[in-house]
Amino acid sequence: MTRILITGAAGGVGAMLREALQGYAPLRLSDLSEMAPAREGEEIVRCDLADRAAVDALVEGCSYIVHLGGMSVENTWDVIEQSNIRGAFNIFDAARRLGPARVLFASSNHAIGFHTRETLLDGASDMRPDSLYGLSKAMGETMARYYWDKFGVESVSVRIGSCFPRPKDRRMLSTWLAPEDFVSLVKRIREAPRTGCTMVYGASANRDMWWDNSHAAFLGWVPQHSSEQFRAEVEAADPARSHDDPAVVYQGGVWPVAPHTGE
Ligand code: NAI
Ligand code: 15L
Image 1 (cartoon, rainbow, N blue to C red):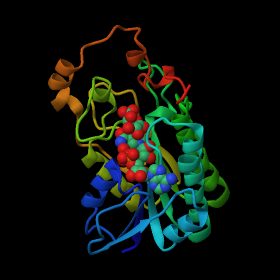
Image 2: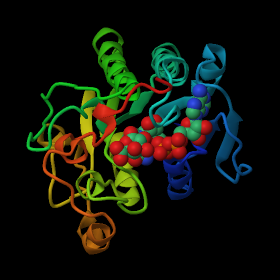
Image 3: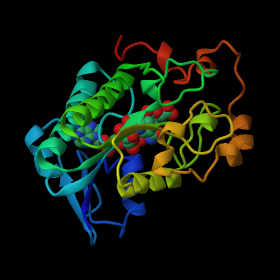
Image 4: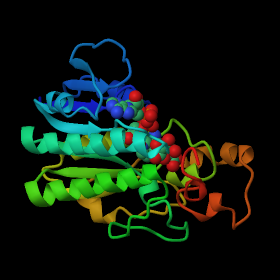
């Protein structure tokens, strides 16, 4: 079986995926941070995604790259530029030169965070980044498009909502992606005969959805979980806000109205 590269493997989603994919395929696990020692079927490679030669060595011999590594929240431009933009470029360009390798790009709902919540988004909706972080994800998606159109590198950009063991607030009742649903999506993207260059909204089958994935139905991904089981406890812990509070106006929550880091 061909090797899967997981970047950001020491992070919250990466560590969860590492456990879930044990025995599914040989894994190359990479991060800047330390990770638990390799087990059978695993390789551990620590590297900075901004280091092009190191990323080349990382990608060599892998046919599927689950690219989770990078700064996962808002930060200064310098940090975002190095980890997310240069990092994504290094991954896509290595996939072109050393592949064929299919890429799952961990994009984010913050690439579309300026859309308001009454807008149902689909595969044709505009990107509306709400932060430098969201901008880096929009650029990553654009890189995915470029590397497909020009070089035939297959990819799926997953605009992850909120992938945590449980939703943490009212907003996440709409954006929650159950870890198990992300695992099944990772497998579907690997096993699909063809992905082309596709975008998928990464959310479970939640009741109040803002996103429509019909354009990506060909992947055969059907989320099995819903945030409804958590609604009562989340609503009790997070009081309802006024209808014009930015936290409830925008899909990105308060990110659209947050200042740049340090300003
Ligand atoms: P995380 O912050 O827990 O993990 C990210 C990992 O990337 C960290 O272990 C960090 O050490 C590593 N990293 C950062 N910069 C690096 C660099 N220059 N070189 C190598 N490694 C570097 O984030 P999480 O929650 O696991 O998210 C994984 C991915 O999914 C991220 O790309 C994030 O932006 C994206 N995402 C996650 C969401 C979520 O709800 N967890 C929602 C939307 C997107
Ligand atoms: C993200 O993109 C972040 O990586 C994650 O930490 C959450 O903030 C998530 O979006 C969200 O919007 O809930």
